[in-house]
Length: 373
Image (cartoon, rainbow, N blue to C red; front, side, top):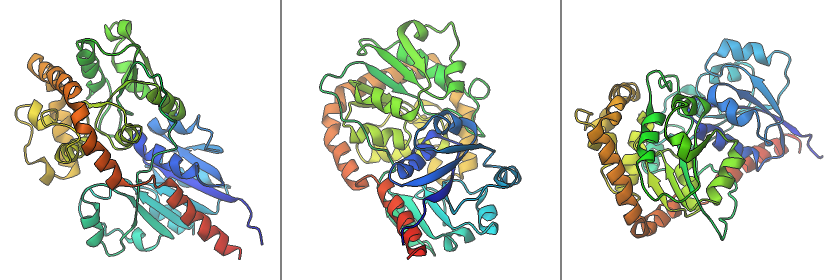
């Protein structure tokens, strides 16, 4: 018996672009009618992506609002990427749950009851994840990086892409308690001989926080792009400068682009950059404890909340002349060093393995087909 087309509710964490692009990597490989909950910066990707069939605007951090938005909507299962807020709601509604954690390697043991109630649970591979999975009562299946199909690098590439991520979370508000985008624009403005044209991409609030009269606007095009357009720009660029996120870094690795790292802008990026340094992808000196006097050196022992508070409190120091000069000097050092780093970057990509979106999609597909056998 041929099963009907699966109707899949999709929920991704609105704290970063990475959760959403991870979700889209699964949808790309799955024949399903997708209903995506869209909120915060996720709207800048989900509302315009062809992998999404229908968009439901609701705050995925507010279960009551999501419950109201789902009234009258009939779906067969739910796929959640790194958002715990509505898991109890989905289980109470009797929805089969597929869960993906892109930050499973970070934090303490995963004891929440939902782990044993999922149809399948997955975690994106990253250094430290094997140890975390061994400690788990219900270990997830480890998969490769949840990045989408990437365009082939162009034979003739030119220009510089600066990628600043979504730039917003419930803790970090561009132009209010964070001026990261403007600080990085200050630094980029002072770096000489960047391949032209220069393009800076980020979430819309971060772009707006740079200011209309900033000198970078005379040097670069600033924009918020749908993910496929962003990947097209990346594939055609000859130099890639990025904040130390997850998927943005993975995309640069798999396209084998000359990639330079900016300082972190949130707690997870501080931890991720320390891993990239340890794995030899970039030399030390660009992480916040190296740039800012007084930043906690024992940051790996802090809770996410305490590390976030430290990042928000210390980010203004990036504007200090001495700190700005260190950032520029380190970026120029990275430009000189990147060819010698390519071996370590290839080895890291080899450790991550093949992109994992198709593996998650296959598990969902197999479950659905078994229901109709």
